[in-house]
Length: 157
Image (cartoon, rainbow, N blue to C red):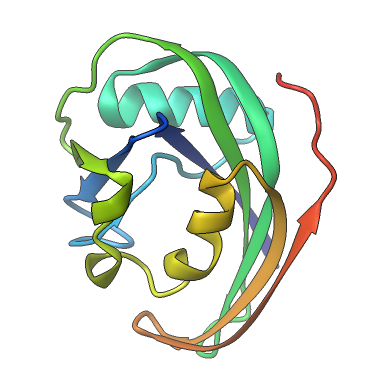
């Protein structure tokens, strides 16, 4: 079974906005903003909604940047995460029940407090690459193997 999710990454030439997950899947880790695609909702609409709900940012322009698939040894479910770059937005980040946003210098990304896969794909994403990847985890802390491929860019949505 495949579960569709979204992940929005907001960054400048020098900083990235990450959120400390306060509850649910991934609690205690820094991450981008995103989540489940609701029934009848497009992936893009879900990305915009999740960004707004998790940190108060209104995405005006999103850029599709790829798809990452995650598998865990103890689950038959595949998490299909659609990546978006936030090209243009409105508003300032605010803390919510789910996330505590914080800006980090690109040279100080807290990879040791993020998902183990992030150190493999996020630097390429920040270089402007469009990615397709697969990550296979033993558990939430142990990445067993992965593959990442760069794809041709698509237009902003």
